[in-house]
Structure formats: structure tokens, C-alpha cells
Length: 83
Length: 168
Image 1 (tube, chains in turn orange, red):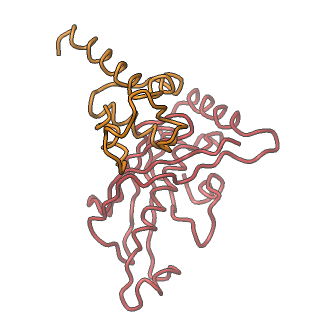
Image 2 (cartoon, rainbow over the protein chains, first blue to last red):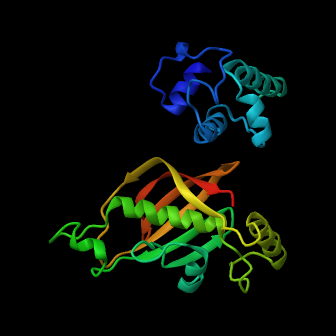
Image 3 (cartoon, rainbow over the protein chains, first blue to last red):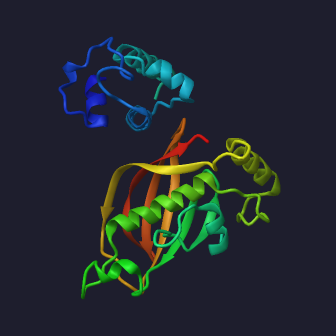
């Protein structure tokens, strides 16, 4: 997930410099709403996962941990149906 | 949408209005704009003297203005939006008018990010460019557009833009 974030947002830091529980938005990473949109589009393209609205997005993007929990959950749901 | 309607829906004026006509418009989804380039344009004198070439940034500007029209066009003007039934127009109209405060500023959007833009060939005076834009995703006050500029059937530029809407 950290690699995904660095790659998607073209951040000039190494993935492991992002704290797992660090606030992604409004914190020291300096991410803004355009970055949020980039992550939403990136999730759709790379994982086929859709964020339905801004409210859900705010919860999912709080930290790397909330994001990866969400992605794992979504992919897990799909795995059980068989793809 | 003809030029008069464009002037009603876009705040841009000379020397910066880069869409002559909308050929197709499905509000909040996709649209196709059209711009003619004539040797008499103000910028050709300087870009470049003796070799008039359409500046890439103005192709982007035309794509961004087309995107703005798709996102914010009011459809309450004599129902000129092709292909949309009357019911859909009413719904779209109230979405726009709800966004403007009483006596306040009209909703407006701004270019927020040029995510990718490739220019495949140069455009020269006498050519007619069509600007094809489609909303890929919108999220809060932002919308990401897939954009393509064409001359005839040939793609001359393509990429992605993000527009940001000002609230009131």
C-alpha cells in the first residue's frame, strides 16, 4: 500500500518513510484533495475497487492501515465469489 | 450548444475563449467541443513569427473549457442539450441552480491538475479541432476527465485533466 501511494502520487519519498498509522491527509505528508482523487482512481484501476462517495473515502484514507484493511477486505470478498 | 449559449455558460471572453461550439453535450458525463483555428488569431503572430503553430497550452485550455461546460452547463435554456429527455433536463437544472447562492457567484470550475497530456502532432491555421472530454470520476469538488483533441478522425492530443469546482 505504501508503494502504491508513493507510485500513484509520485511522491519523492521512500515508501517506508510513510508511517503505517500516520495521518495521510492533513498531516505532514501534505496531501490534498487532488491526491485523494488520484488514490480513488488508482484503486479502481489497479484493484478494481470503487470508493462510492466522499464520506467512505474519508474513512478509508485515514492511514495506510485503514486503507490496506479496506483493500484486503474488498479483495477478500471478491476471492470468495471466485474470479 | 452554439456560440451564444457558450458565452452564457462560460465566463471566458476574448482573448481567452477557446470553444466555438459544443457539438455534443451530456451534462456531467461527456461532451465534444469545436474550435476553428484561423491565421488571424492573436497568438500566431508570436508563436512563431513565420511559422504559426497552435500552442499546446491553448489546446489544453480548450480541453479544460470543454470540460467546464460539460460539468457546469445549465440545461434550462430552451432544452438545447441533444439527446436528453425533458425530465433529465429539469433535474440537471435544479442541481446547478441549487449550487448558486441567492444573488451570489455562479458556480465556476478551475483547472486543478494536468495529469497527463501528450501532443501527437502540431496543429496549424485552417484546421478545425474537436475537443472530446469524458468524466472518469468525480469526488467532492473535483472531477477527473479523460480528454482527447482531434482534427477530423486523427487524435492530435490526449490525456487526463482534473477540474475543481468552486463552491459558491
